[in-house]
Amino acid sequence: MSKNNHGGVWAKRRKPKINLRLASSKEVEDLIVSKFNGGFPVILSSGRGAIKLIMQEFWTAQDVSIFQFASQCVVNAIQAASVTPYSCTDFTSDIIYHQWGYSDPKRESEPFIEDSCDTFLAEGSSVLRLGGQFELWSLPKILNSRFGAIVWCKNDKDAQHLRVVRDKAKESDVRKKQIYRSLRIINSWTYRIWEISEYKTFKLSKNEYGLLKKDISEWKEKYIERLELANRAYSFLNHKYQDYFEKPFNLAAREQLKFAPVVILLDSQKADEEFLTENTFEILHRIESAKKPQKYMVYKFLQDDKLIC
Image (spheres, rainbow, N blue to C red):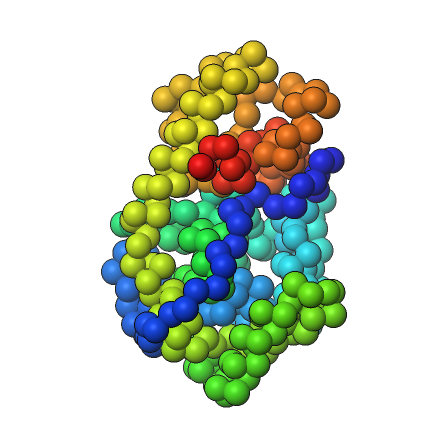
């Protein structure tokens, strides 16, 4: 996907913290309902587990079309549900990607899944904006949580079904998955063991639900912090790199920030080797339905320690 891959565009994962808060999945879901409009949320352990569960329970065909350059975790999750992913030559797909927080334009048919893993919407926003049957949010990518995903369902019946399947998990399996999550960074074998556990156990512990309830309760504050950081990023680019771009960064450009993206799309395709030696800049493909992916230089402002400090 990238000519110059420095490893992701998101903020660093938060370190484990001691937590005495307890909550149920229903308490977390009721809190989410109070903040957004237009769907029925289900809280699950991870985004990859959510994709696997949705495909397993609701997709009836043997294969499914996915967006270009889909990440390996998306591909693995679909295959774990015994479904074959493929990419269409016309760049349409059943699973679409609202990439980096920027919305994929409206298309003629409604998607099966809207992958909004890194789309950070303001409280009061509507979900399932393109009419998908499901929409997926990754809480590590949005809130910098250590785990957790929200599946938005168009139909309440589908949400109820997902909750029933989720809650079949044994507490012993939930505890095992917690251990596997802590060990996953050791090597590829422990990572695979953890990934398999995510495909089998979609439930979290009361302690983990408590952590997510705290994170979600601070949604508005975290959203404002993201916008303020993005504004500092625009000011930084204006000051240091204005000679590289045909158009100045200004308030009009900042209108892109309404979805609190994780990268800033730069105004020009100009680049040189010196520019790309900085880890916060990268050339990546922008993915939109029915369009050939286009290369953009992006500024990964969540990873700029000079900006964050």
